[in-house]
Image (cartoon, rainbow, N blue to C red; front, side, top):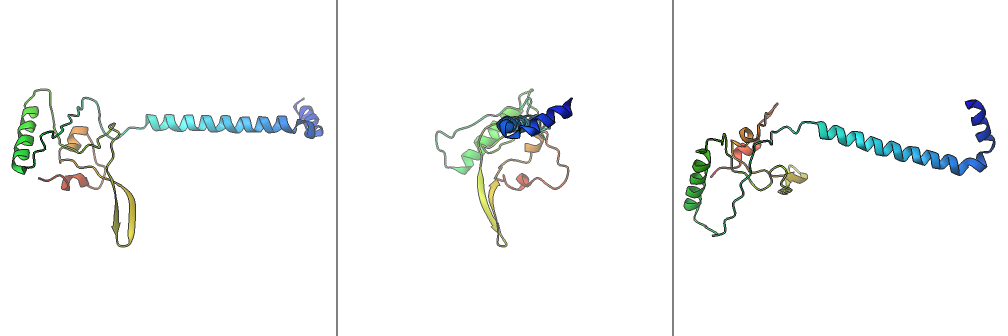
Length: 150
C-alpha cells in the first residue's frame, strides 16, 4: 500500500513538487523548534555551580561622595560588623556590581605575549565570596582572592 502511494507520487512528481517541498520545509522547521526546546530545557536543568537561595544583596550608593579612604574603611568595617552580628547572617562579602541575576557586567580587554582577549569579565570580590555563594572549586584557584585588598 505504501509502496503504491510512493509510486503514484513519484509518477506525478511535477504536480506534487510544491506539496512535497512544503512537507519537507514543515518537517525541518518542526525539527529545529523541538531541537531548540530540548537544548534550552537541558541547559535550564543544569546546576549553576553556586547557591543563590537565602543570599541577599545590599547595594550602597556613596551619595555623600566621601573621598577619605580612612573614613570609608571605617564605614565598611562598621557595616560588616553590624550585619555579621545579626543571628540570621552566616557570611558576608563585599563585591562589585556584577553579581548573579543583576544584569550588570564589567568587561575589559587583555593583551599578553601578542595574544589579545577581547571580552574578559571582571568580578571584584573578597575571599569570603565563595563561602557566601557556596562555590566549590574542582581545580585551580579563585582569582578574585587576590583582587579585593584594601
